[in-house]
Length: 326
Image (tube, rainbow, N blue to C red; front, side, top):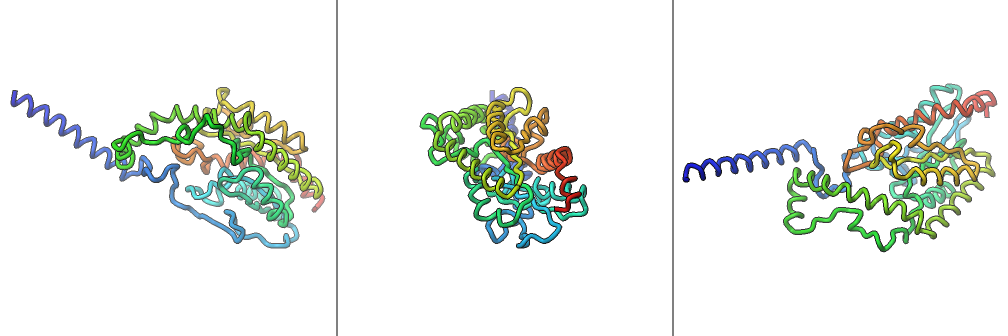
């Protein structure tokens, strides 16, 4: 009996030591983010902020002769603010370089007018008070499906606890804060529930958010009026949520279609990135950190830039500029 107990103790002790070693290794290699970094904020890489408080370089005023400017309105999907992506990899600056290569007779600049957390109302307000002065030749409105949010958007039936995980006990909280392996298991276990809750939430801000929808319509109307008066084309690009499969099972196709319809009704060109760029792609390969941070990574940004560069050619935007010399 004593020998059997000794063997059992050795097995359990070895298992415990192995688990602790694996946990320490996972923490050392940063395979799982620390508990205080939810959502994950990786190292700031080439983080740039100009005098206006947006993530962009400085641009000359007035616009130099021979310069073509693209104002990009958006939120964290546009600037991926604070995440590990180089400024030059963002789709705005990347697109400007692509257009420059196609049309060396002009200098192309992307004016990033975006901040994390902005809605369409914020972006149009920034366009009026800030971006319009840069004399854009095109405006790109980067639309994400939560851009109709308002202060009263979340219905009472969906609580904060539904959308973000919360440890249920002191022991669980301690394990989440100190054990990388337990944190990994916990987040994976909670992920299906969180995805379902977020899906319900995103649908609710279109179905049960009259204030937000009304403000969004007004902002889109103002953008149409301002750009039409100055002859500035607007291109609305609709980002998908990379948390979900980017195939026929993608759950927000109808919302994409509604946004596209409303944008076209105002005379805007529309690019549904789910269909034109990302359909059939592995969503994990396009996220900053799969399972923790579903913002588009550098590869996704370059894919968006490549799509837009191709469409600029197909829509004959560049030949018109190059031959008229406007």
